[in-house]
Length: 257
Length: 257
Image: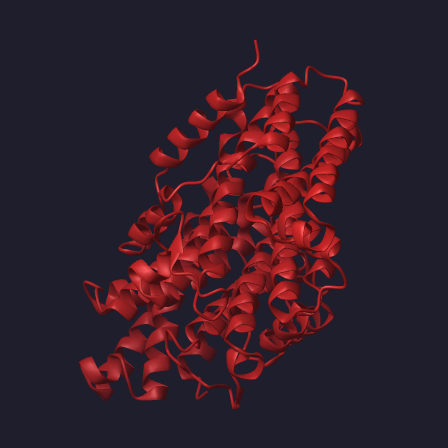
């Protein structure tokens, strides 16, 4: 009986809660902890753990990788919120990290989150977990650059970088954590590549922006359903029990928050 | 005939110059490249390469590790220069990265440098190179926090974090790149731990601050000479040809820039 998405989320939440930050961070640790615990749906690490379990290892084996992904995601939010970027004073109903701790400590909090992520990702015997995380992080930063400078060639490119990279990596890191060799990863990765777009379109539907503005509300809904359908079709090509990943796709397609 | 410090520096400089940044960075790559080429003495990667060669491999084997160290060092300078931190408009006679490209791109440039560093560090078969780099980066960030908040218990703690972590890692990464097992590293590491302090005191003598203000000019000079002497004594305990590392110590002790 595979672990349910909600049980995986609790595993991730508990692991983040219990995370021992590097002692040499000294007082900087407080703002890092604050940034992590302000919350979120933990959807990337849940996908990572579900992938690892479907690929044949206990989900706990993917916890360092999943938490590393969540820290990279959190790092991106902490820096995006800074006055020089989006100037967001709130994040999920709480003061954003820079608003709570000042701009200097906010910048360092993002830096520390990124370094902690690589500390976790390098706790595996293979460097592949951390290597793929570095690639995904670079793509995400490139997307953020295209966004703030208004230089993206199109929305698909922008979102595949800003959102897609970390979702693809959620599947990829789960595979490395499960010890799946590179030449057996293709079908899984084709699935991972569909997830970011699905997440992004539904996000835009919930926020009434992005795809809703460019395509209209009905078309955005149809695009989301088509992305979910493609993701399910990709899962059909994976030779494993992927019921939990399918459940996650269904949940992403109809989520209301 | 081991490679001289100046030859090692040229190796590092050429490698940084030829570094292929991750394509998905798109336009963000320009500010990253700018930050790297504004220069510096490349002392950390030179130590890394010299350690690797003394430990028995061609210095080129340590180039990814050495360049990763230099990128982490550069990341720290780019973020330290930001208005919210030191507000430095110049770096080595050129506009600082944020001054040249704006604050938002300056923040992202530091982020991208850190992620590129981990991309390089994870190019080895072992995760130990990147793992040690993550530890050193976290210590450096902790030191920066103590500095800007004025909460350091003392100057030795502050400098051992802000400067010492990356110098110790220069030796450590060279050892991992050379494939030296952990239980044979102790004598080398005792040497690495002395380097940061030596570098810091001479830095303060050149800038007329730090140790010069707290200890006076003559005492600072004596402390630097003692640190160099301890570093040489540590090298005597290493069972290898360490003439180039000794030359580096001598150079650090008497440097005038």
